[in-house]
Length: 117
Image (tube, rainbow, N blue to C red):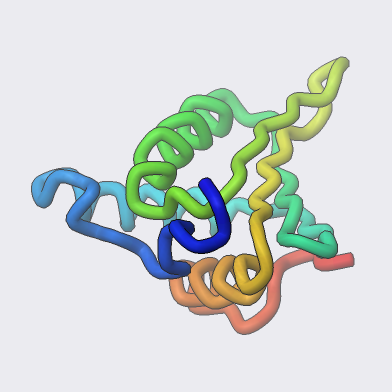
């Protein structure tokens, strides 16, 4: 996509079926309340989660739906060896970092991210 036809930096909640929307928001809220550590990046954030049995499947579900309503986000899931933590990296073009901060704060009700470094 060229700069002139980039999607707006706003969620298109109509991209997620109405019957899935509330479930997605509740699951996203629960997931992001489980953040152990946050690293600020120049173009976004890297969120660390404990290696718990359902974290990876919840992250995959989150990314699967979130990419529909927020096509301007880059998503990366990293799993560290030896039962290490699971990371979700959210990045993007100029303005995305502030969007991520606002959305995650809105989901969790927290003004800062847990363990931010």
